[in-house]
Length: 154
Image (cartoon, rainbow, N blue to C red):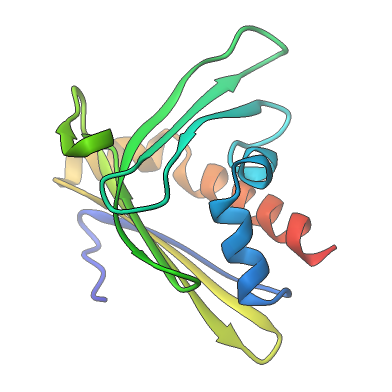
């Protein structure tokens, strides 16, 4: 995949766990809720229908408060154990979203030490990419990748 530096953002890291464990953490709602949002905020998975057209909906609680909207997305592609593609441009059942911003491509590849993890987040234009970057993309997605690694490496 070619990265467009004007519209795409990327996080990659080596996770010292088998690819199957990383995949399970991405596709099991209980596991996903443990790492998907940077701590100390909490995540609740409202919907996780891991199939093309299926919903991925999460809620977030900060400072112990009520849960509010976080992500309302639709899976576009599933290659079991290897690749997940989802977007917030659509919601469950391929319905157009109110405020689309990104499409994420998550790839998991075997590595001698575990799993080569890569998240590429594509945006429709450079303004959305800059907004996502300035919202803390690298800190946020980097933190959740570290939380994912901590969960599956133990």
